[in-house]
Image 1 (cartoon, rainbow, N blue to C red):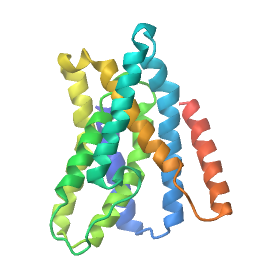
Image 2: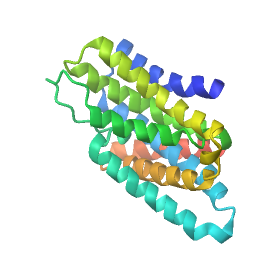
Image 3: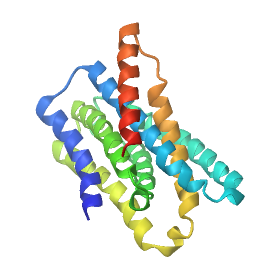
Length: 225
């Protein structure tokens, strides 16, 4: 139960930060994204990759599923416009919920919930990743003309997506039978999202040095999770 509560709380925490503090410093948000990207990448490499490659007889098939995950995330980003790594382009005059955006984010969130119950540390990685994503999503929604009650419903639905993925993974044997394949798929998604965040170009040498320090700190922390 605590797993579900924590993954839901990550979205609400990100939204609450935006609602209360209304952060406007983009550099701070980019550093937070860099931290989350590095942390997610490190958790994926330290925890998920060794798990799926335990069976050396199926190593190549596992690699295929990882590539499918990378390509799937690329397709999802066509609809989400890169919301998973900090880029959302919504018409500020719109009064309608961007359905394709939330459909894409929903699939991403459900899939990332699958390995949580079976892999140490991945929950922390997802929480760290979801907080800045929720902040960005909430910020952009508040800038539109969508009614506040609708925004709240959308954020609640978004918060529930990852727990739904975990619930499916825990209770459906048909999914459990393909756990490694699905986990490899999720690894591909995580690799694409995290590396996109980390390798985005930034303005200024000083900012790049700060970002490097943030990445190193996140990597060391992930190692000891």
